[in-house]
Image (tube, rainbow, N blue to C red; front, side):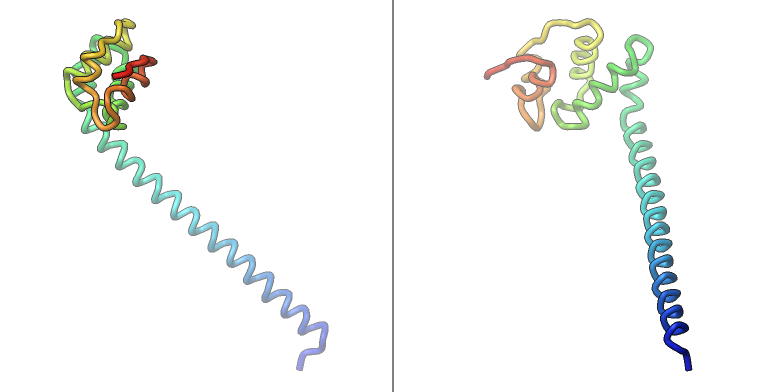
Length: 127
C-alpha cells in the first residue's frame, strides 16, 4: 500500500503525463491539419493555374504577369465574365490606364453587376 506522499506523487505523475500526452496529441493533430490544408491549397492552386494557363500564355509576351493576374482575379471573384474580350479590355486598362467605358463594363460584368465591377476600377457608375 502506498503512503500519502507516494500516492500524491503518483497522481501528480499521472496528471502530468496525461497533460503532456494531450498536448502532444494536439500538436500532432495540428500538424496533420496544417499538412492537409497545405496539400489541398497546392492542389487548388494547380487547378487554378491549369484553368488560366491559356489566358496567361495568350498575354504573357505583351503584358505583365501581374496585370494578367489582376484580370483573372476579377473573373475568379465573379465580378467579371471569364471571357477573352474582358481580358483584352481589363489588361489594356491595367497596362495603359485606358479610360473606362461604361458599356464595356456592363458587357463584362457578372455576379455583382456593372456598378460593382466599375467600383473595382474606381468608377462611379450609377446606372
